[in-house]
Image 1: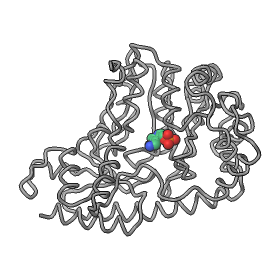
Image 2: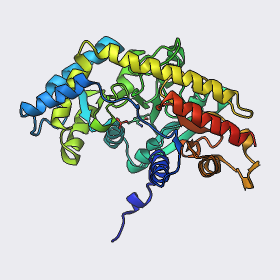
Image 3: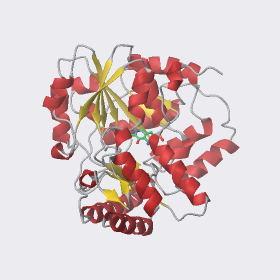
Image 4: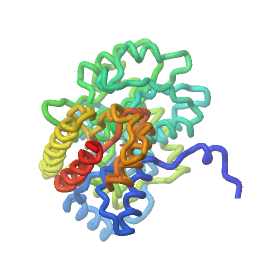
Amino acid sequence: MKISKRAQDVPPSATLAVTALAQQLKAKGMDVIGFGAGEPDFDTPDYIKEAAIKALKAGKTKYTAESGITELKVAIANKLEKENGLKYTPEQVIVNIGGKHSVYEAMQAVLDPGDEVILPAPYWVTYPETIKLAGATARVIQTDKSNNYKITPSLLKKAITKKTAMLVLNSPNNPGGFTYTPQELKDIAKALEGTKVIVLSDEIYEKLIYGDTRFVSFASLSEDAYNRTLTLNGLSKTFSMTGWRLGYTAGPLDVIKAMGRLQSHMTSNPITFGQYAAIAALTNPVADETIEKMRAEFERRGKYMSERLNSIEGVECPEPTGAFYCFPDVSSHYGRSIKGTKINGSMDFAKVLLEQANVALVPGLPFGCDYNVRLSFACSLENITKGLDRLEKWLGQ
Ligand code: PMP
């Protein structure tokens, strides 16, 4: 059957592909250590599961308003006010089918063919595709270790053209594991003043921050920032709820309404009993304690992983300040041959490492940074130790 040009132009997700390949090899009996995971390795907390069961038993099994039930939108608006200093009415909030859907739908709601979207690299693999699907063009700002993988106001100003419609900001960052400081974000907000650029602020990793890192929501920085920002978040990472598919977007009423119109034809409401579980997730008094346990464990692993990576010759890895990824620069090994196979870039690095040492990580190229590779520390410390021992031995040959 004919495949549309739109669908032909979209490659499969590189991160999901690595996980699938590692699983295939495992199924064949190979002892593979996987660093591909983009999801917490903890189970969803019981109090959230129980809320879903209770909702199911109470018959919460029918359609709801397409943008989500009012009680959940109220809970999200309260969370955004209390934790992020953001005043949104419940009507300015839409619940989406996962954060990925929030990104897609937000772009569909505000972008037109011919628009440019500024995309700092490293970027999450989904952004370039959702930009393309909205008919817009990504204008990538390349960063690297010399600027800590972050854009600066001057890099940003240089990238703005008459066609610029949006800037995608993702802090804490996937795949970079870095977090913009409040001052860096303020400087970016200032640089945007006087422009029409919409900011898509993807804050899905907000709770996973380490050391003395502080998180601020971009929209909270000034009235100007508030008015130009779509704040995007979700329950996947914070509450270990990746399979529940619950994300949300808050922003100017007209945009949220436009997203609602699109959603009413694309998917209708997010799963009904899941919405009740989301209310529990956000409002139960045990939430903070539950999140803290997971956060602290990620912090321990991230510290260990980055220290070990840095101790390997030719590997440079900043200590992660957020999310659950290390994103080392391994480019000093490019051009070498390991056991007779030449490593020419991150794709070779990942492939040959998997074949020769049974360690699965994600190449940096699909994230826009071929010098790097991504290792997730959403796996046990035991696996991290074993996998890094193998990586060290492999590179030491
Ligand atoms: N934004 C970023 C930066 C992510 O890494 C992810 C998950 N990989 C998402 C959004 C979407 O998460 P979900 O669709 O599971 O809510």
